[in-house]
Image (tube, rainbow, N blue to C red; front, side, top):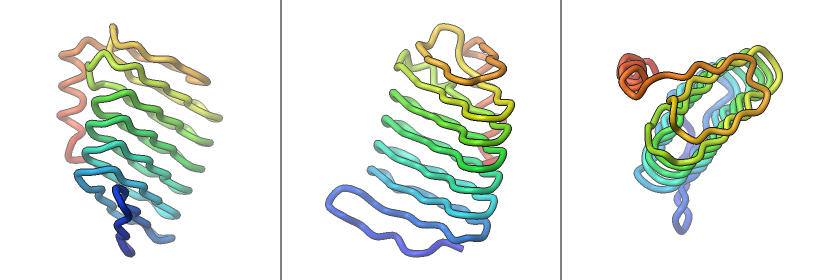
Length: 151
């Protein structure tokens, strides 16, 4: 499942395998590679970069300015608090920017039929999203809580 975690000066590098992995970041800055398979990736705190790779992946950021890149496949991404960038990649993806933090997020949905969930008043820029669903802060909090155990 999970291969090595290598710590550099202030960056942890976490690599998955070609199979389905459950990858967890640290409390600091992480660089996470999901590689192949249907991965579940949780970046946690810090300014993280996640490359989900091919497969139908679930990738979650955490507090911090994160960049989350899906890959080929039908991915689900969740940004945490902070100014985040999400790119769904090729496939029918679902992107979430529900932190209610008034930080600018960028959602680049990519090729495929993609859906973006955002909070009504949060500053979000969109590119290539076929459907944008704007939620109230209460609706967004309920959706995030209901899906917290599912990746």
